[in-house]
Length: 245
Image (cartoon, rainbow, N blue to C red):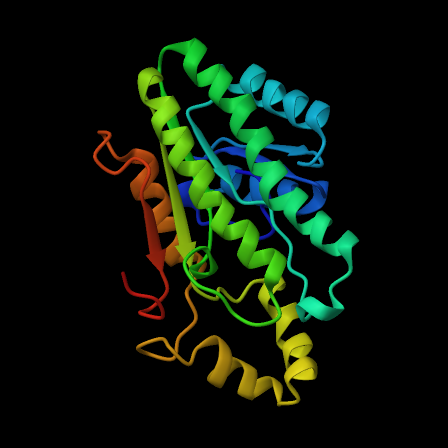
């Protein structure tokens, strides 16, 4: 799992046990929680935009576990700004982490999955913004839409090797990434933080609730363990009814 910025629940940790983060401490904390619950985990620090670091990190995980069966590509950041004020360096940085990172981790894992003959599952952490748009998030929406395209190509190319690909598309999950957005959006929109939560983030949900990490983990585990190619190439929205297909 790349980009682990919060600790996943033990039931998924025993299945997805390779943790990669640009910062070692969150990955180590997540790995420690899994180990404490009886699972097996390894924390590896890397910059997912750097080819050599990604290849070395995946190789370390393969060395430790004898292979890789599931990749959850989850590394991401956010930048809040209208298009007219968006610096090019911020555009490039966000796309590099979301899309270059997804490509590089996919390539490294897919090479092994194809060579091993065991196949595998590659899961991208998209967003409702893989399906629609919101103001102030041009690079994020662009990147999340791009993951859908990458997933479909990997599903087609991976099929010959028994490799499936999917995208999980959560609504707003109250992680550090979202917490940071609340005051930023309040400032940009000229409204209170509570109004951002109620009238922007959760307005279209059926219950006024944030998507939870448990919601996302359950769907990710379902896709990782799915026994056939019936769902390969598909994306699943997990948003408490915010976006319905």
